[in-house]
Image 1 (spheres, rainbow, N blue to C red):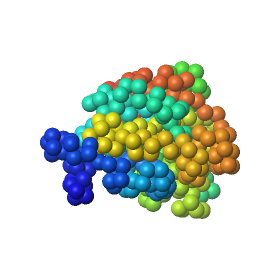
Image 2: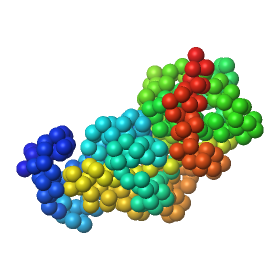
Image 3: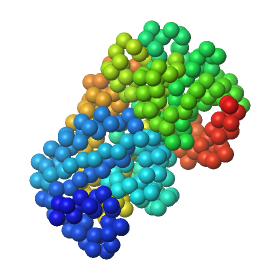
Image 4: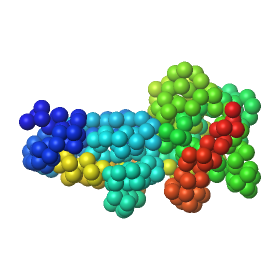
Length: 341
């Protein structure tokens, strides 16, 4: 039976025929179970610590032994992998639009998936800041410095990376407010991307290009990723908080079609709910995400300097509209990317 369950997980029940469905649904509370968390780039360390925490909680609660698998990459690519058949029990992605895509391309989750957990199914938040070389030799202080001719910017590709979309939109809204117009924002972001020599696929790849390959003068990064780079590279990097940035709200969901087939819904749902527990929220803060819990946020407040944050809804009318205007085929990012060459 263990080998059979392993085969079900790797290949998916649909590849094995109707008998596989009955085997997958016949699991008992005491039978071992594997959960696959398909996530975006900078969450590797968070979930590597969270998995044993939740595994112990679940074992004490139910007696069931869980094992965990993680898959990481650019958020858009991760969503596409699930749509193409990757058997995720949960998706913990960088932006709501990528989970919306799971609904629109195969009904992997229901339309109202965001209503199933608090804070629109976002158990933690983050923002976008700048990572610079030690001592900040280019004196980069705010978004306006990123379009100077002597500055090279490292950021991933918004077509594959959720973090890159947050980067893009943060820069756009800064410029729109500074210039007072959409035209001014478009001109600014076009000039910014002319300073980007290479677009990596995901946020972790961009961080590697900056920190290990010494590409660029400034990395646009998740706040938690900036802290991780500081821990790893010490005095080789600094980071800068700009005058304004975006409130990034990475969402989570059970992948309904997969958990129904695998018989893993109860464990998968509890896996996400436990992120909101005080133990889960403390771990969130430890890994430099901004907790939702007031107690955890107060404990880790020293990590999170106050800055002006705007939301995707306030500035862009939500992810559906932002995707249509900026990231759909032929939309503003494609036009800007063509002009940068």
